[in-house]
Amino acid sequence: MTDPSPRGTRLVLVHGSMSSSAQWADYPALLPEFDVVAVDLPGHGSRRAEPFSTPAALAAISLAAGDRPVVLVGHSLGGYLAGLAAAGMGERVVGLVLIGATGNPRGRVAGPYRGFAWLTRRVSHRHLSRMRVAVARRLGVREGLLPGDASYADLPAIWRAVADDCPPRILRGLSCPVLFINGRYDQMRIDERRYLSVVHRGELAIVPGATHFSPLTHAPVVADLIRSFVARL
Image 1: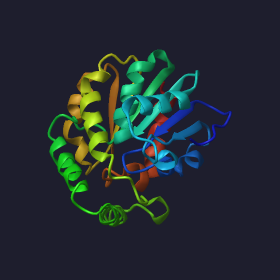
Image 2: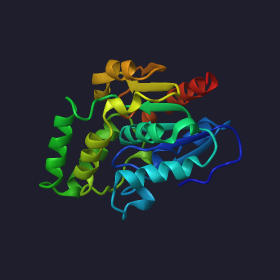
Image 3: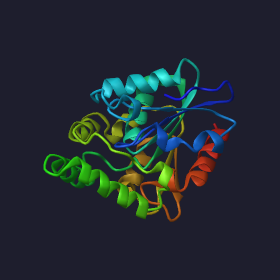
């Protein structure tokens, strides 16, 4: 977990699967008026040796939030978990930003992810890592933010946990405003209208030209969307 600063509204940033808090490296400088805290989830980054579990992930998010009002920002896996955390944290969460996390994990997006999980049991993890880095590089992720070697062994359990614990209905009881951000070409846009219909105060922003990697490839745009959203709270 990065060290918090004393200034501004606290933003807790939660990374995607096979990534770490390093994916948010640009955001403290892009959002200097906020207290930006990026966490490592169990099984990732500095906590790679720890087994992933939903309770441990929620504990990491809650610890980063502290006792003050907070805005949770999550990308992909981090978005699903940030939504689940917000549902359990009550009025501590004054705003929620979900990036690339509007595909129902029990719906049509589940098939490709189950297929990838199947591959992790049959293909060298080093080879999978090389493939993922090559795809990220082609999609515009710069060298310093390219994913390193990841622990693929936990992926089936991680995605199963998302399917079991993070259906769209968990957002129904939220009292805070929710901003959904999707890249124009993000596969997770598939159920974005359903997610909008579930929350009481939701809005949707589309990042032109971006894919599922929008927080990495279009960080200034995503940061501006976060800033504008927090200003309206």
